[in-house]
Image 1 (cartoon, rainbow, N blue to C red):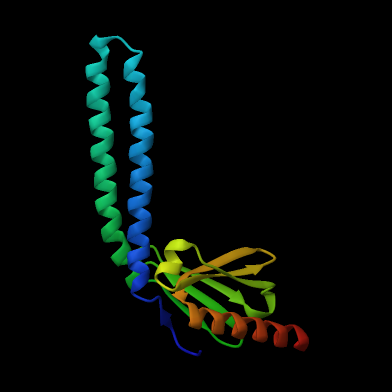
Image 2 (cartoon, helix red, strand yellow):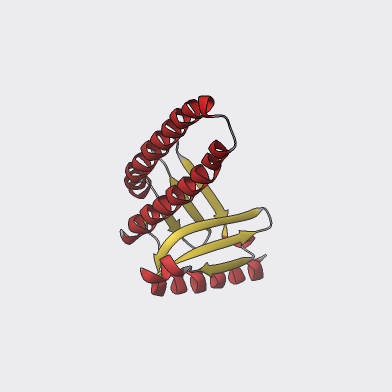
Length: 161
Protein backbone atom coordinates (compact mmCIF):
# COMPACT_ATOMS: atom_id res chain seq x y z
CA UNK A 1 0.00 0.00 0.00
CA UNK A 2 2.90 2.34 -0.74
CA UNK A 3 1.03 5.25 -2.29
CA UNK A 4 -1.11 8.15 -1.17
CA UNK A 5 -4.79 7.22 -1.19
CA UNK A 6 -7.93 9.35 -1.22
CA UNK A 7 -11.19 8.52 0.45
CA UNK A 8 -13.90 7.11 -1.85
CA UNK A 9 -16.26 9.64 -3.45
CA UNK A 10 -19.25 8.12 -1.67
CA UNK A 11 -17.98 9.57 1.63
CA UNK A 12 -19.11 12.99 0.39
CA UNK A 13 -22.71 11.77 0.46
CA UNK A 14 -22.22 10.54 4.02
CA UNK A 15 -20.78 13.89 5.13
CA UNK A 16 -23.71 15.73 3.51
CA UNK A 17 -26.21 13.46 5.25
CA UNK A 18 -24.50 14.17 8.57
CA UNK A 19 -24.74 17.91 7.89
CA UNK A 20 -28.46 17.63 7.16
CA UNK A 21 -29.04 15.55 10.30
CA UNK A 22 -27.17 18.12 12.40
CA UNK A 23 -29.28 20.89 10.83
CA UNK A 24 -32.51 19.02 11.63
CA UNK A 25 -31.38 18.62 15.25
CA UNK A 26 -30.52 22.33 15.29
CA UNK A 27 -34.03 23.19 14.05
CA UNK A 28 -35.61 20.97 16.70
CA UNK A 29 -33.60 22.74 19.42
CA UNK A 30 -34.56 26.17 18.02
CA UNK A 31 -38.22 25.17 17.99
CA UNK A 32 -37.97 23.86 21.56
CA UNK A 33 -36.40 27.13 22.69
CA UNK A 34 -39.10 29.07 20.85
CA UNK A 35 -41.65 27.57 23.25
CA UNK A 36 -40.42 30.25 25.65
CA UNK A 37 -42.62 32.63 23.62
CA UNK A 38 -45.63 31.06 25.29
CA UNK A 39 -44.62 32.36 28.72
CA UNK A 40 -43.27 35.81 27.86
CA UNK A 41 -45.46 38.91 27.35
CA UNK A 42 -46.74 39.62 23.83
CA UNK A 43 -44.90 42.93 23.51
CA UNK A 44 -41.48 41.23 23.74
CA UNK A 45 -42.38 38.17 21.64
CA UNK A 46 -41.80 40.18 18.43
CA UNK A 47 -38.14 40.59 19.36
CA UNK A 48 -38.01 36.89 20.10
CA UNK A 49 -39.48 36.12 16.64
CA UNK A 50 -36.85 38.32 14.97
CA UNK A 51 -34.07 36.61 16.94
CA UNK A 52 -35.45 33.19 16.04
CA UNK A 53 -35.52 34.13 12.35
CA UNK A 54 -31.93 35.36 12.49
CA UNK A 55 -30.77 32.16 14.20
CA UNK A 56 -32.54 29.98 11.61
CA UNK A 57 -31.05 32.06 8.76
CA UNK A 58 -27.54 31.68 10.21
CA UNK A 59 -28.11 27.94 10.65
CA UNK A 60 -29.27 27.65 7.03
CA UNK A 61 -26.17 29.50 5.81
CA UNK A 62 -24.02 27.12 7.86
CA UNK A 63 -25.76 24.14 6.22
CA UNK A 64 -25.05 25.54 2.76
CA UNK A 65 -21.45 26.30 3.74
CA UNK A 66 -21.02 22.75 5.04
CA UNK A 67 -22.04 21.38 1.62
CA UNK A 68 -19.18 23.37 0.05
CA UNK A 69 -16.87 22.30 2.88
CA UNK A 70 -17.54 18.64 2.06
CA UNK A 71 -16.02 19.11 -1.40
CA UNK A 72 -13.01 20.91 0.08
CA UNK A 73 -12.55 18.27 2.76
CA UNK A 74 -12.71 15.38 0.31
CA UNK A 75 -10.26 16.99 -2.13
CA UNK A 76 -7.56 17.42 0.51
CA UNK A 77 -8.03 14.37 2.77
CA UNK A 78 -5.52 11.63 1.98
CA UNK A 79 -3.76 8.82 3.80
CA UNK A 80 -0.58 6.82 3.27
CA UNK A 81 0.44 3.52 4.86
CA UNK A 82 3.83 1.85 4.60
CA UNK A 83 5.85 -0.54 6.74
CA UNK A 84 7.04 2.24 9.10
CA UNK A 85 4.09 4.61 9.54
CA UNK A 86 0.53 5.64 8.86
CA UNK A 87 0.18 9.21 7.59
CA UNK A 88 -3.08 11.16 7.55
CA UNK A 89 -3.18 14.45 5.64
CA UNK A 90 -5.98 16.99 5.57
CA UNK A 91 -6.54 20.61 4.62
CA UNK A 92 -5.13 23.01 2.09
CA UNK A 93 -5.18 26.36 3.87
CA UNK A 94 -4.80 24.83 7.31
CA UNK A 95 -2.75 21.71 6.67
CA UNK A 96 -2.74 18.92 9.19
CA UNK A 97 -0.46 15.90 9.00
CA UNK A 98 -0.68 13.08 11.50
CA UNK A 99 2.09 10.50 11.47
CA UNK A 100 1.55 7.34 13.49
CA UNK A 101 4.60 5.08 13.79
CA UNK A 102 3.55 1.49 13.11
CA UNK A 103 5.43 0.30 16.21
CA UNK A 104 3.14 2.50 18.38
CA UNK A 105 -0.13 1.07 17.06
CA UNK A 106 -1.95 -0.85 19.80
CA UNK A 107 -5.27 -1.55 18.16
CA UNK A 108 -7.15 -1.05 14.90
CA UNK A 109 -10.94 -0.93 15.06
CA UNK A 110 -13.48 -0.83 12.27
CA UNK A 111 -16.71 1.11 12.89
CA UNK A 112 -19.81 1.12 10.75
CA UNK A 113 -23.04 2.89 11.55
CA UNK A 114 -26.25 2.60 9.54
CA UNK A 115 -25.38 5.45 7.16
CA UNK A 116 -21.90 4.06 6.47
CA UNK A 117 -23.38 0.57 6.05
CA UNK A 118 -25.79 1.97 3.45
CA UNK A 119 -22.82 3.03 1.31
CA UNK A 120 -20.76 -0.08 2.22
CA UNK A 121 -18.10 1.98 4.01
CA UNK A 122 -16.28 1.58 7.31
CA UNK A 123 -14.38 3.95 9.57
CA UNK A 124 -10.90 2.83 10.60
CA UNK A 125 -9.84 3.83 14.12
CA UNK A 126 -6.09 3.51 14.83
CA UNK A 127 -5.40 3.49 18.57
CA UNK A 128 -2.04 4.30 20.18
CA UNK A 129 -1.08 5.05 23.77
CA UNK A 130 -1.29 8.78 22.92
CA UNK A 131 -4.82 8.62 21.53
CA UNK A 132 -6.66 7.60 18.42
CA UNK A 133 -6.84 8.71 14.81
CA UNK A 134 -9.53 7.93 12.29
CA UNK A 135 -9.81 7.36 8.56
CA UNK A 136 -13.40 8.40 7.95
CA UNK A 137 -14.81 6.07 5.33
CA UNK A 138 -13.13 3.31 3.37
CA UNK A 139 -14.80 0.62 1.27
CA UNK A 140 -15.53 -2.33 3.55
CA UNK A 141 -13.29 -4.81 1.75
CA UNK A 142 -10.41 -2.36 1.62
CA UNK A 143 -10.95 -1.46 5.30
CA UNK A 144 -10.63 -5.11 6.29
CA UNK A 145 -7.42 -5.41 4.26
CA UNK A 146 -6.00 -2.21 5.79
CA UNK A 147 -6.81 -3.38 9.30
CA UNK A 148 -5.06 -6.69 8.73
CA UNK A 149 -2.08 -4.97 7.06
CA UNK A 150 -1.65 -2.41 9.85
CA UNK A 151 -1.95 -5.00 12.60
CA UNK A 152 0.50 -7.35 10.83
CA UNK A 153 3.00 -4.52 10.35
CA UNK A 154 2.55 -3.43 13.98
CA UNK A 155 3.16 -6.97 15.21
CA UNK A 156 6.32 -7.26 13.06
CA UNK A 157 7.55 -3.88 14.29
CA UNK A 158 7.02 -4.90 17.92
CA UNK A 159 8.89 -8.16 17.34
CA UNK A 160 11.83 -6.24 15.88
CA UNK A 161 12.16 -4.02 18.95
